[in-house]
Image 1: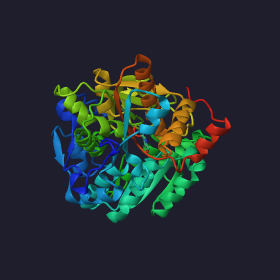
Image 2: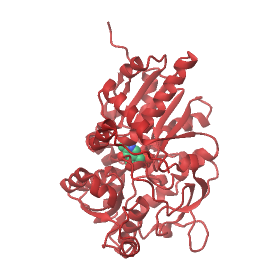
Image 3: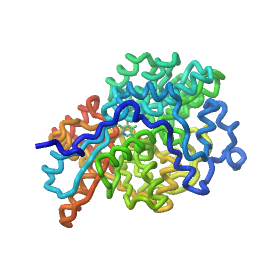
Length: 439
Ligand SMILES: *Cc1c(COP(=O)(O)O)cnc(C)c1O
């Protein structure tokens, strides 16, 4: 019997997208970031202390497509791009669903997640601008790992502020970042004024992404050749991640796959945005009826329970104000294993799409997502990242809904990363000691 042509759709290196898609071009008027001092729309100068020129240009761009530099495309090959689109036949069989389920394999990057797609672009532009050090924050450690590795390709040093809770609970990620050559501090740290202030006021704090961002921004702002690099949320990050969705559209064309649902987990929104924005662009033009679902954690349910308003991206209030769904700049979430889903806010582009009813969102408990992750591991053979388990849970729910209604349906989700460094989480799930994540 011939293997069905949609079991696994691979593209060749020449098919790595040549340009990024910018959803901002198709969204009409968007609320701009504001300068917190003046209350007026932020200008490029407001970002100058922490970002290089090309990143600032992309952040404010309304161009529909932006060319990917050759050097970035060449290096994407080493992150295992293009990533396969694979059919979850064995999961379908296990669920006894008439639905077809496909997943985009961002877990195949040697860095373990989708984060290298933007890390590479950011390191490239910063190196071009003569920057010698990049500072950043990391929650679970995937972003720090991605930036630490790609910085080597461009002779840049990386300093990572890692949320203290993860620093203590996830020593393997710290070791991985050290292996790639990064300097790693537990945040809050004694390295910055803001960190010292928090340590004095709340010596027991396990930290948060918002605090770590404040520390990384402060350090970048104090040195002209040090810039800050953010792993999610901002428009330029969404832009760089659209290689995921652009490849997926090409693969769905080859496999004659017409999705009813595209699903991804959402922390700051970058794998979700990167995966769905190119298709959302098609929907805006009336070329598809596909629905889009963001799967978030009940520990930080910004889209489902947050408010759509201007808020700071960090705890200290160093960043411009962003119009987004947020739980508040001082929100400190419970310590769940899906560290990447613990951010208080959400990408302004994803937030605008949510506010206009173009996407929907669903929040899940930690335990039910690990249950979905174990089912996926036992059927498809891949141990998913705790964040990705949220997307799998949403995909399984949709597939079971198809079964209940006796309807077929096509579900495509983004497997944002693997969970080989998160096995302690799986162990807790399996021995019944895992905590609830609800706030
Ligand atoms: C960081 C991360 C996420 C969450 O970040 P987004 O910006 O929302 O994509 C999800 N999955 C994995 C594997 C991650 O590393």
